Image (cartoon, rainbow, N blue to C red):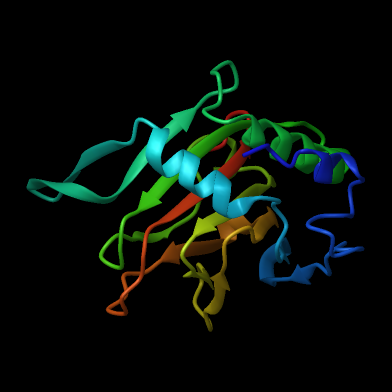
Length: 207
């Protein structure tokens, strides 16, 4: 199957033949903001299949209190000098740079991948505060592939949580102070769900 990179080349505001998709920005408290761009990635289902089958996924264990526990998802990480596992990821990063680099002030540099095998896989409440995200405004762009899952956000100081169901090809961008003043999570679910791959694009020095 041929990659549909030409859809990105058609212009910064045209994705999947939907015409203008320049998103409305949702301001959050504390100088944070987010944008959701539906059906942003062309050939999302094809990319999901390629990544799901070919990425060297790693199962990790993490110290928690007095024991080690399994991280409830599979992971893979590509630093700025690493070869990405699929050309479509490079095309997506170039599209993000086109739309956000003037505001961000730097390019997106790394790609993190998480594989949620079923509803038992999850990620707990957190902000990407390893590195510069703990002290500086930045952006993290998450593209969802595969089966829909809900991503939740809540302010660190307390308050109502927001819930976004992300479908295959949807993009969610968190900016401003979001990583240090808000937290996000993908909770477990009892509903029968299939596998999902989350692609996280970040600038250098943000994890």
